[in-house]
Length: 151
Image: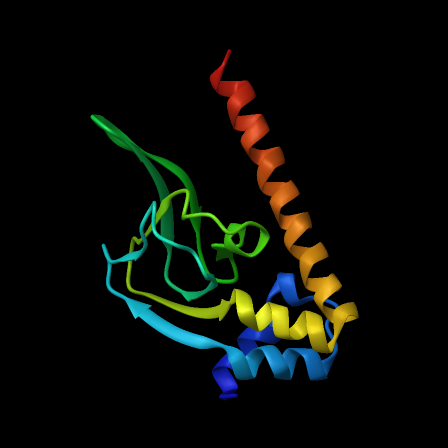
């Protein structure tokens, strides 16, 4: 694992609590992608098979409806992740993610997490719990936004 990836993966909140062997395993499975500003990283309706971790840059998550302007659901920067719903359920992408500036991401496939589950279920449980905590935080934020918008 290169030094940049090693440093990055150790700093990710979603990886907090993992032991060194699990971090090294996931780091060894990690892919890397780069996108220019305006580049589509994932497209709504496509099959999802990986999670993306923003290393540098920013992205926005948008939902489109026929005949209406796209709605921005979220914006993420360094240290944030997206695409985790593909780990939880095997459905198509629910939104598109677009780079708003040059962006570098690291990726892990669902199969990589499954390998961790088979080899180290205790470490897999930590990652899943961390993802669940982040999802709960995001849901709380959306609840607040919805509450403010409805008044």
